[in-house]
Image (cartoon, rainbow, N blue to C red; front, side, top):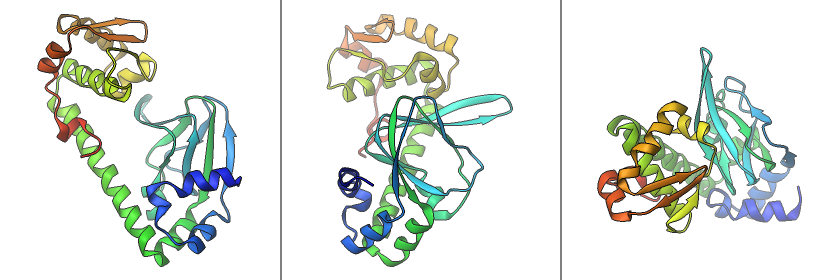
Length: 232
């Protein structure tokens, strides 16, 4: 693995407090690979052979059943995915594919479990990350079950605005068909929902979103940090 990749991974909260000796042991069998867009990385049901670290690009976590599929999350640099399956030595519950050209580090799962058993700081960091992931799932369920489709879209627009630097005009982070899947909607319903946000000061042209009336949108969306704030 290139030295630059070592440094990027070492700086993640998950690995930052472990001893140098244990980090070196963990990285001994790891390697970095470049993947083009739309390449399947893992398939749900397969054994969890590697912990993945996205160093550049982006990855779609998705699931399929009975001829249907849904996007569950997007992983962007620098972050890991499939940590729970790695620690538990359990099959993947999700599949993953690259959304664009991506550089990904693969760390053997058996090495992760071995270091987990001997490095207390690493074990605590794993628990913290899994706890944060659990809270994210709870927030996602609350968003899906407590809000209408129009309210979910309105709050998504506000979250995307925040990620874009609080500007009034920005681009959607993914294409609309995938966004509909993330929000639990059909593409047709998403199109109608965007039109439904017009009275609340939202204008959409292609993938560009412009917020014309911030106050009106926030009054309708009623953003809640216990649903929408990833830091809580």
